[in-house]
Length: 125
Image (cartoon, rainbow, N blue to C red; front, side, top):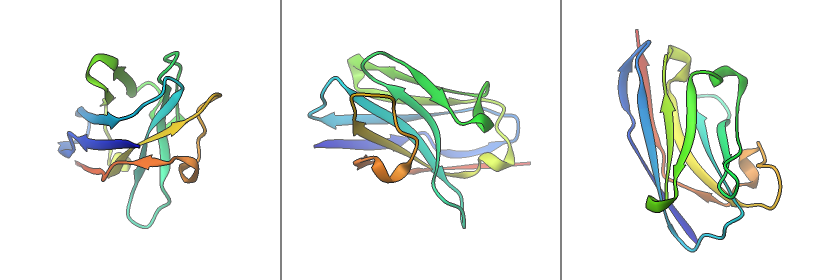
């Protein structure tokens, strides 16, 4: 079992930055994908960034490329999402997710087995 706990959400002005953290605990095998998803009111949950913990390969949804960076601190079992140049469309509940996977990290939320409780990010003008 993997337990995930997000933190770092809050309010930020458009153009600002925020860093989210996801503390992972429990048994974790080496081949694991971790990801950040987000969900705005009335919208489907959307994958934002993905990382293969084993080899560090990352990928992003087009809308955040060049602005968001997903990273890991293996010593602290912590996943991060650095968000820069935030805009109003980035307002959402952000979730950390994990999946044991031997291949490319999948993009769909419904295949991820482990989820955190979410942390709200609100961007204002």
